Image (spheres, rainbow, N blue to C red):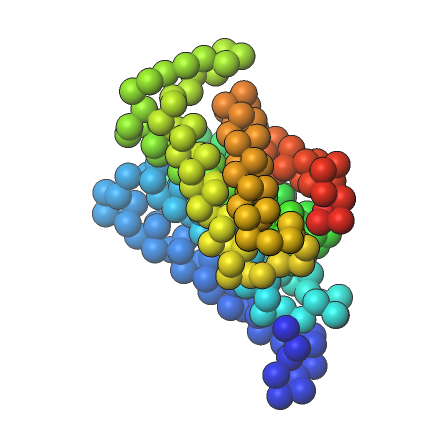
Length: 244
């Protein structure tokens, strides 16, 4: 986006970063409040997961022609540092631990949550406004975010792969919402690249969501936040190098 009113790109991108900060921190604080009132902690984690992955909706606001577009990862980078610090020093009573971990163990912050922010850091700098990055974050945020919820509350048909117990319902949630999230974010952002034509794009998203669902089913606990984006980005690198 070209800065309005002839604003300096550095100033404009800084303003956009403040907007992102308000968005992400508002979601986290609201979830902290709900958890303190008895809202399920596992669902709180996933809402934050989805909201964080959807931070890419603010990419079109940034002026990509200036180096300061990298400010888009400022909040993610801050949380990367916080997860490292809190993972080693926080207590189970810390709000971040309560909101973003399954068991209340601060060490969990050094796994899935940390990996998630690292992915945001890399994609926001090196794949800014790229179709491949938007789809990757949609599948990671929406698909992988909702898979455990469907698995926990609706998962009646269990299966095992490489020692990991999963549910058919959870995997379906991953697949379906990976597709839905991708279509929503791509429609909002209109990223650079992507298959030509609506049918081609939908076919591509369905295929990559299916691949990501298999990766999630095979992934050890807490590693899927790293493996899913690696596999999806490798897919685009080898299958659609122009998109990548």
